[in-house]
Length: 481
Image (cartoon, rainbow, N blue to C red; front, side, top):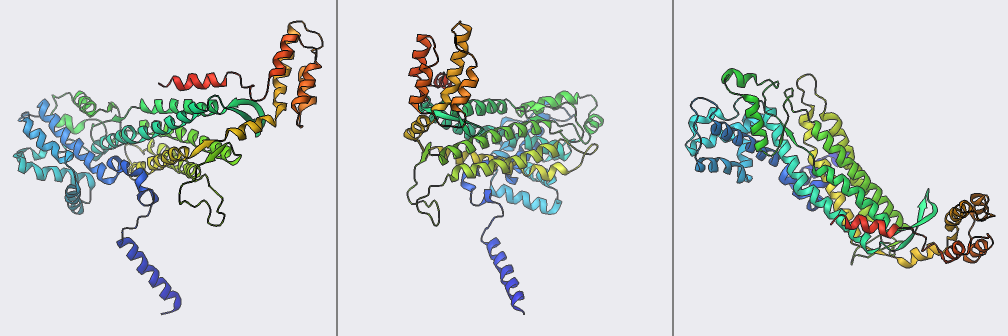
């Protein structure tokens, strides 16, 4: 064996040992699992199978309750309870049992059907085994199972995490709504604001997107192989199957899609992922702003005991939480955009591009949840460096040029003489150069303003030139309560 062959053999052996040791391919199931593990309850393969059992069991019960087929009786409370235990007590043993069925069927939904049928005998319901999966195509089960998982993942995991992040930003904004700050438009010194108002802008934007996401509909259908209720109708022609289907879908807490091909069209998923992506992108912008504020010293990061900022520069406290969040927003959006584009297309009545795509929904949401977690943690390690903000304002008196030329315009309209070309005169004084407080006040005194206007401008400083920024922040933050 050559040295290269030996090296390859060692590598192959290492691969086998790492797999045996439980190594995982993706970071969401490895390094970041503790931050996103709640999603596995709703969007893992096991959760999908449990939700398939939910749909199959509830369809079985629904048909019995309505006595749709001749020979059907309503189930007793005990029988319904026993049936529902198949999903309320879905556990590792259930997963293993399903895996055994799938090893034979090589079909995940058929395995669920056999799993339920196998338990009917113990319940004394063996004669009704043919009612399991009655008139259903796999997509009838899958679209509803996915809708349940997505809905619960959004409402039970993502929305609470997003709201926590928004609340944390709002808390920080509340504490500095009166803290004056030099704005930077195009990266250049501009009309001052308050730090709290700028943070409140993100609170307002993120909350608006969150409210949209909270109102999202989750659609479902159960209408057969090509959406025509053909098998339903030929088996029981007297039944009003569209009405039965609608009542069933709505009983699951979903919205009914009345017209489809074999698949539920997934339009609602594309809508949801667009809104999630927009939220992520706004959060991405927030992270970039906070990162930039940290870089110019507006925020100080509280060092974590024992943590290392740089492997070679011991002084550094890197803004890693916001950098991590940026990257995970980008990863989340890449997956969500792909899902939104892929899922709304299906050749003719059915293709399976959605099957493998939808298995990545949890990955897309997982990266978003991870970003939210990092932002929330990062904000908890920030303090506002008010002295730095104040010094920055005091070094940029030229930003008062806007105020002075605007007052001159108002004075001209009121009839005060000598107010010609206010913009041009302030441009000559301020553009591309620093202006001291003394020089600015000297200029104001030379203008011939009314005594009231002159007094107002002489009192003005960059730190007090914030308009109603604090009021705007307060109104936004108080409006959330």
